[in-house]
Length: 148
Image (tube, rainbow, N blue to C red; front, side, top):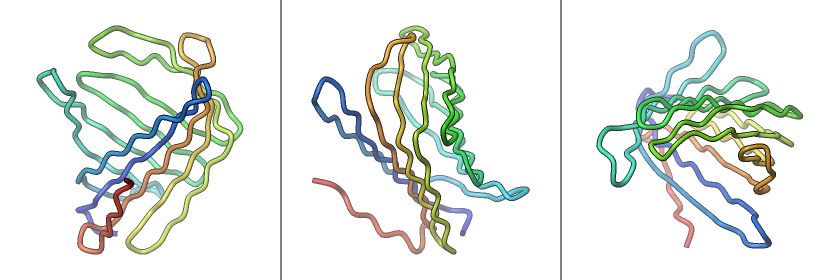
């Protein structure tokens, strides 16, 4: 994997019988240390000045998403475990529960793809069933397919 990567994060939430999809594509930096993969990228929040610094850490059985700046959170997705974390945003704080049902990690020379299925709780109440796909590709080899 090269240092310069293209990151595609897509997901869906099933809430009250309705499906909400989201997809984001951005550039970032990749590095590997002690058998762990790290992906770094910046994100802007519409209507706010400043950026959110994001770090994704991929280990054999888990994925961490760490956000600092306008929002602050450390989310851990680990197979068959429920994790609670405080999610601080410009609009206030909330307690987020992530109950990871499955996680699969597919590593290739120029691509790492992580798929996660989880339940989402906000302030101790179940909100939705979710899935997320994090696809990291070497920028030079990247192939992007946008959903319609």
